[in-house]
Length: 288
Image (cartoon, rainbow, N blue to C red; front, side, top):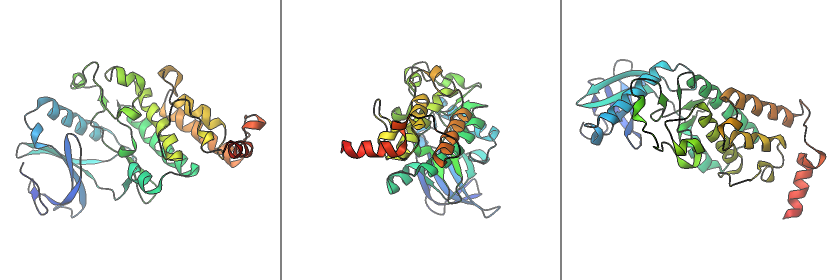
């Protein structure tokens, strides 16, 4: 495929309007479907991978996976073809911002917004876990929409139990290292869904503080207004041993919502008196 400029027509149907983004293996365009008149997002495999069997197989696997996933928090796919020796698929276009961009613009999120967003992400992730493991959860792959909904993006690195499963070689490191579970860093082929819980914990800390956590940091040292139980929640989500983590995205979400109820005063906190938000604020004030 030659360079696609504005006005180019793909497969006699999709008119290119602009470039939305470029990743390691693919490029995404904003296109208009001539048949429906609706704007959509079209992802192509980069030309340099046109002769790579592994790259094409991984692209095809992503298409197959997205077709099987059916959840409002996951991008819907409408069409997939090969045109001029280039693979592409067409998915819904949503006018939103990635969580990464929102963090750059706003610095951090409130506890209420963090709970709302991560609860939706966990809900979508639990559906995805019926078929696959994402393996690349990060703020770049979470889209926030103006109506308050979210979309999980980029399942290109997902672990999918199909005929292409051997594409992940033993010892390979797939995903963003700062959000990658320890077991995935050692062997990306030998993980389960708990590897996707680890980055949720990292993102929880980052949304509240504006940066990723360092070793043994407690979230209440930075956000003393939230319940002390958030420390144990964070530690469990990011436990080095997957056996010590939340067993599912649903368990992660349920505990997060329980902490929100504590923050609202709907249920009692089990924290000691010196661990209560007002006391922690005073302690942090004296530390300064």
